[in-house]
Image (tube, rainbow, N blue to C red; front, side, top):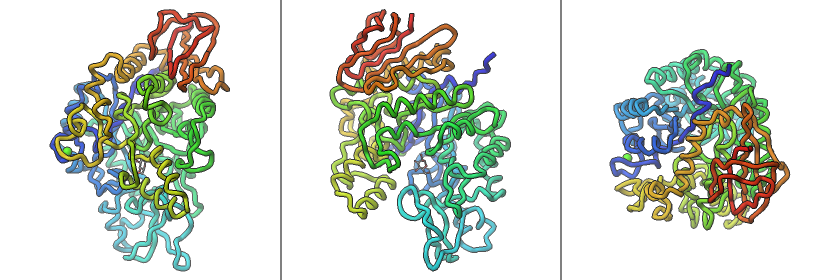
Length: 541
Ligand code: GLC
Ligand code: CA
């Protein structure tokens, strides 16, 4: 008998609180704003909310720099609001997965304030300090946000490590007391009845800075096993680890249930299908569909029965998928539905990022002054210094900047897209009059209802949850097609990734289950003419 875990059949919805819904008119989204939209998430049918950080933070990286792990930022509300939110989610059968950001704290966290004050502070060793080399940084480790990963600290004359912003000092996971504090903090949230943790850049906690090892360090898995034992192990929660640099073997190490680490991983290999191999995300190439298909297929196959993967196109760190690999102009609705189908037809736990379900697009940035994210601004400076032409830099930033995902959620066609009654912390996409949740809910043919159907299908059909995966026509440069099979039942998922019509063929007939165009009940699979961005799920007869 197969023991099914609840999160294998779940669909997750990611909320970026700052940009979701503002309840009090200060221009910043908040917890009460989220509470006011629970009905909407219920209608969509999602089971889990991944809540991006709501903790107190100086916002050098919008909340991913935490100064108090147990509190709620006054910008987002009070602890009472949070408790009400947790209760209401429970009443609506929605689980909350908290963002756990424990590779680093804010430099304004009391631990760091203490630690930097003196070499003898009991908190000194909670962070990673090194002496300089001949007045220079200890080594050439780089921050992911640009520049050296080492920052000089006046007070004690040593450098501390930060893989991200200099206001995000890295914690020293070698320190047992520090780890014990993290376990206590996690248990505190578990006691408050949250149902899971999404673990921010968890793949770098096992670093060895002297050997210049960042990801997948030697003790990483030992730490995760300890975490599992000390906190959520045996508690039927959902845990997902963000890993930017994992291969399938590493993916299994995290998520093979027998190893008692995490339930699933959130890895990005497929998201590199439009960047020049070995280069940065800003180094663009057109989508390589064959790469994309092979990467998905590899993860589908190699985790089969031995681990679990997340399925996603979007997050607060990625540009909007309909602008990226769809067509956000004449085929916005068709291509958004096609992309949803391609993803939700696979095995794994699907994630939807706020606004994806209504086909929200990238922002039409006109210059660097429109952008605010720390990673974006650093990349701009770095590329300028390297001599890239302004136009080329802006092309990269418009395509990939995280700012694209962080514009406010578009609720209706009232001013500021109904996100706030005041003036929003960040610009609303000018297309809100056309693209908004209210309009999507009024239109049976909207992207929203397509997502709703895909979510419902996953609940009804064990095949989508457990079925095997077989890639078809692996070298075809237009169509992504695969077969899912489970207990004598066979489903075919066919997606045309481009606007040019194309053909596809498979033996026999199919019964249509879901499509983004008008479709007969029966499809002759031997000669299917696929329309622009057409997607079909059918059962093979
Ligand atoms: C993760 C987060 C990202 C953040 C970084 C540092 O990648 O998703 O938003 O900037 O970690 O915390
Ligand atoms: Ca607010």
